[in-house]
Image 1 (tube, one colour):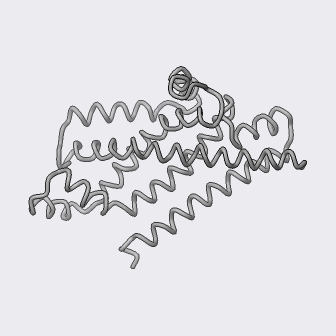
Image 2 (image 1 turned 30 degrees about the horizontal axis):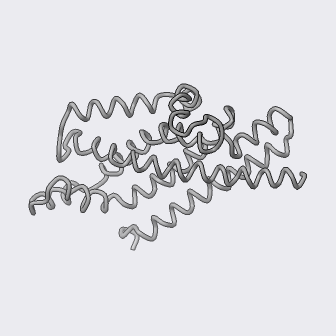
Image 3 (image 1 turned 180 degrees about the horizontal axis):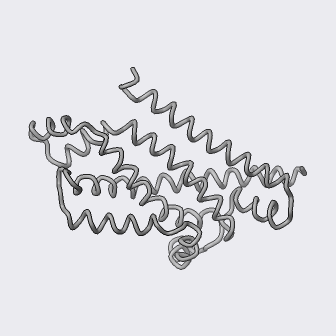
Length: 219
């Protein structure tokens, strides 16, 4: 493999890390509040509201049901409106966030459902407001599960970012498609797959180790 190709793979790796980490961070900024709303307004929630839960649930489910490649193409005008272009790693962040935020919301909702109801009732019995229950009880108690969800989300969004290479999204996915697929360079294809697998493994193992450090149940 030429030095030029190695340099290209290094650049692609950084672009992939940039797209994945930035998209996941923004998706959590949007997805955590959505997940909390889904949980507290749902059945048995501390602020039950069927109408709000139904509307938010439908929006989340609709966005989650759209295949990423179709979503990527469908929101190209929105992507151009937000970042001024539809090509490159920064442009790919927009559809990645739109696809990942609903996924994160369901992950957060699932994590909050694991919190012991007795802890929540005790907090409410002591006069805690719904906001205090969310901030001081629900999220801290669900912390380890939320971290596991974040590791899973990173690996999932990494896979999405590779698919964006079909429409000029940049990163390792674009290199795999442009050189490995269109130019039949099998070594490049294998190299990109190996790099993606290593990055996914690092995300997963790093997340699990972090969980083992903060999870009081393992001490």
